[in-house]
Image (tube, rainbow, N blue to C red):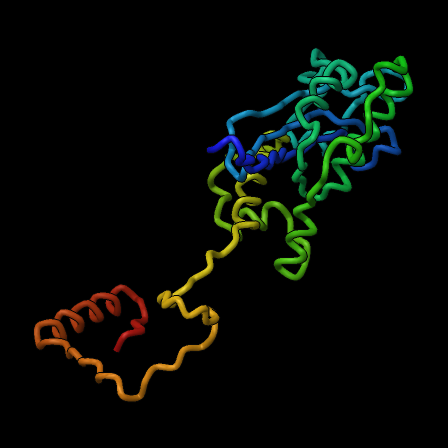
Length: 253
């Protein structure tokens, strides 16, 4: 690279997911797990951010989760009891995501919880320690919306993982935040993969439109037809018989 060349700006993506005590922060629910996976120029870097968080209720006591919620993410009240509270991880979390494009499935849910946590922190922090809201430091791509644009209706992460055949790449016995972020990274790569342009033209320097329809000359030489030999026909018939015997329905008669 010469001194006058400007390197292409790296695209930094953070694939993010959270687990919570419930579905509505306005009812006092809190984040209990954050999982982030870093990608640069569509390549996984191996860098992650992961934190378990002890949830507190509005009175500052430990939020008691219902069993139905525990069954989803597998995080119990006992397990979270000795974990840090959100205010203890907020600055390192923000530094990890700052300036990145966040890729989130159903971003309204996760960003809503993140901003709720930021607001709670700011209500108790000194002015110099206050933190910004998510959209002030990151751009956001919602793969739920992307799935609607591409597939006609919004799809769950489970559906997309099966659709793009990446569901076996991650063990999802429980829906952990880091586990789901890793799976969403694979889904995002496949979902946004652009088809390569196929150009069958031969450059002739004429400047003609490479995408224009090109007619084949009617005076061209006839294509040679190669017929199957007797041995090849017999081998084909034998193979069809094997398929039929195993219960298949041969398409090639």
